[in-house]
Image (tube, rainbow, N blue to C red):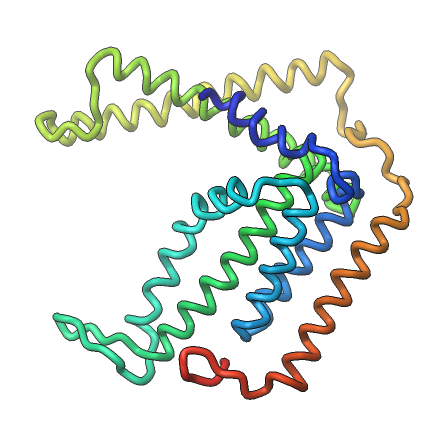
Length: 276
């Protein structure tokens, strides 16, 4: 599937109709960022589990596929999990197992790994929810309405569109190389020659991106763009009752979870060791 097809498939989720899809983009952005901040702040594994249950409930209320959302999380999680899985071997603490070459596994390291993975799952669920609720353009617009400088929002808005174009450009270059029987992983070809071909590909991508950026800039100028141009409208759109209900509910849940930690779970343990 081409990058445009992947982009359409991704943004097709944002076209669904639900109470949460219709909320103001700023509210969705603030609520999910708030949940991520609290997930990073808390050190109680049970609280992270309850947060994940709340996010799963939001997925179901939004008429989103639970299976598709889970697959998206599983697709992204290896990038962060690669750091978490190292913690049992590098974190000091009580040794529970010794591997060959003197590598020790500690209970505190296992605890910290579980904590990092739990935080990662909650954060990625928030990211998947945001990408399913709001189109990329709406996210950029929401950041702009929240006070992000115009230049940053402009760069972000162009970046998310150019990213898919460059992916397609790279695919075309790779297809052209494949038709000429070039395989970067072919061990029979001299390594330095393969390295030069990769360097040529990178250089070609830089040239294509420069040319594309220049043509887009000229197109913007021909349509009257200047430093004072405003890309986004409805900056004074009022927040409705639904948005206030959503924010209040999320705040109330976070406050209740924190009260639960302070007064009812001060000595809660997981994996046999007190929480950090």
